Amino acid sequence: MSKVGKKQIEILEGIKVDIKEDKILVEGPKGKLERNFPPEISIEKKENILKVSFSGPKEKKAYWGTWRSHVSNMIKGAKEGFEKKLKIEGVGWRASLEGKDLVLNVGFSHPVKISPPENVSFSIEKNIIIISGVDKELVGNIAAKIRKVRPPEPYKGKGIHYEDEIVRKKAGKKAVATME
Image (cartoon, rainbow, N blue to C red; front, side, top):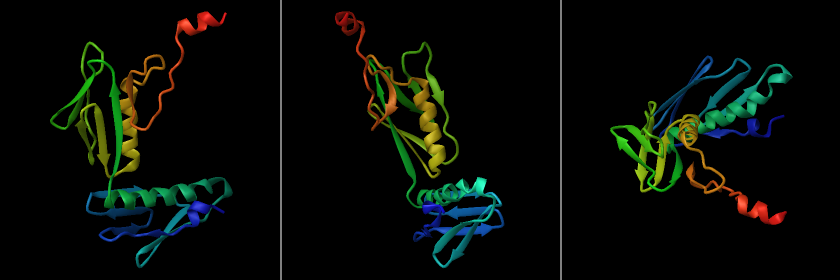
């Protein structure tokens, strides 16, 4: 039995949840989220509590905890939203906003322009890019896409990395030559 799947989800104040057949719609102050769930999963609403249950083959039982987490994240996102912070490290490297688009100047011969999808916004504070939105999965995917433009390299630590990520640096050629 899934330990995560068994937990009930409390519907926060100001959140409206609507369940129809194989679809759940969550609406809150930050925005709307909609998701289709598989037929093995059923979601029941009693007053201000949601219960996710599973009925299907044993091979698909992993869906249970995953879908409970998806529904919980939808409620939290509609109420508070999610954000990821990326840090740019490199001499002369910078990020700027052109309208809603994020423009990265990170050592290429051309600037890299990234457009945000619906319900996602960018903001910049010095050398930190803040990606915020309602959908946790979408915010994480956009953050990964931005990081992929210039991932941190292991010798000098230059690149784009998550704010709390620790970039382990390798020893250069000098350290290897002295060990022989």
